[in-house]
Image (tube, rainbow, N blue to C red; front, side, top):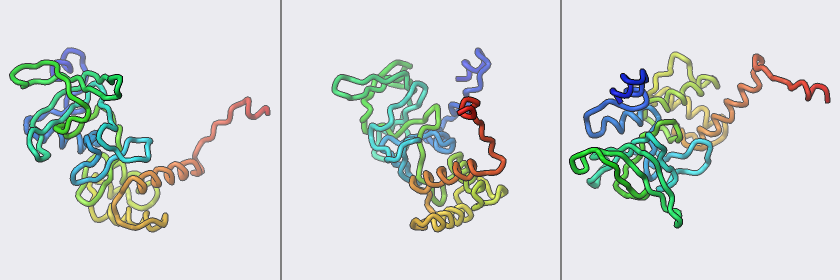
Length: 224
């Protein structure tokens, strides 16, 4: 990535892709950026995930990685990262099974192409080029997804702008709890899929009804 940035004047390293040396640093970087999809749809310390624009939770095989995504693997029974590869493309067989084509190093000792089944159990998840999934948020979570949630709560009057800190602490728990009470759902303080999707809906309505919202009328509509 560093060579690519120098040659083409891009700024991919540290922005689109992380620079790291520790086994789990890359995975944590993507989680903080809000661009990590767990293979089975459950992100540890957060909760269940869903694809943006969808109303069902992710399960194994829901997300098909895109070119440029990173695949994180574990060779042990825990959730520590032991290996990483970059997605080149994916293919689908006649029976519907998907194969991930990657470029990877250290397998065993050089950079080369390889393939993995989408359902391979040693895949932990994917660091994605784009923000493609929502995730349940709760106490202790932090990063870009939390910041976005806080900004929405500010827009609806449940937080102050000065309280936006990308950390899901006491103030955010209280704001989410008060919002859930206001919409008549169980007040848990946890921002699950239903809460976040309702928040997006209410925010869109509030913006539409705002007095400074511009409504563009097509001239043909005026003539009818």
